[in-house]
Image (tube, rainbow, N blue to C red):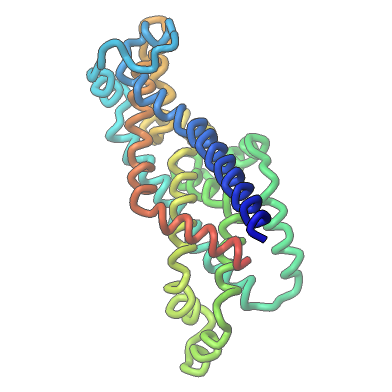
Amino acid sequence: MSKNHAVYSKGTKVTRSLTWLFMLFMAILMVFPVVYIVLGSFKTNAELLVGGTNLFPAKFILTNYSEAWTQANFAQYTLNSVILATGVMLLSLVNATMAGYVFSRKEFKGKRLLYGLFIAFMFINVGSISLRPLFELAVKLRMNNSLLSVILISAGGGQATYIFLSRGFVDALPRELDEAAKIDGCSFLQTYRMIILPLLKPVVATIAILSFRQGWNEYIMPLVFTMTNEKLRPLTVGVNMLKNAGDGTAAWHIMFAGATIAIIPMLIVYAFFGRYFMSGIAAGAVKG
């Protein structure tokens, strides 16, 4: 028994070591691009164009940030990004939590088929294929000159995943809560608002982070919808335009500085809500 225990213990240590090495490797792959951009934002454009193996700049150039801020109109573009990301987040929260509650508690014709379609779209991404018909629809509705159309379209992007998480969490809540609320005279909507929604905090935090990130990182759609009005451009579009700020060559140093500024808000959001994000993902997925 002791020999078997020693072999099992040794095998467990090897498995843990390999797991940690794999996780470390994946972490380096994900963190390296961010580190490269941040350090590159302090280099000269010539140093970036030459390349080389030196990750750190020969001299830290702080003026890249002031140039990026002024040339990209960051104050206006940041406001646009906040409006876009916040709008997508609020619509996603309301829609996903209400839909998850309905799918969990209500019985209606076509429920399984409809939910099955939602789940199927978790693995299907039509991407830019739907961009033209959506833009033409926005033109016909005269909504192509505002961020509202971008918010409405972007908010529907990750609904399948959000609804899946919401329904999984609501399924784990005892139905006695609904019955007690009904006895007290609460309607279906009041039960959702006063009983169920306060209990969905982990999933709400998860959906809030994912949807805010989705709206903040949206690029192709805002680019198309704001072609005729640069005042509506979000940061993602404005930062990309910075590469044309150079004299005949792409100004990568300015673009990297702008990208560094643009990712700061998302890093702050993850720093404050990261633990809720992980617990919400685990709760919604496992309970679903």
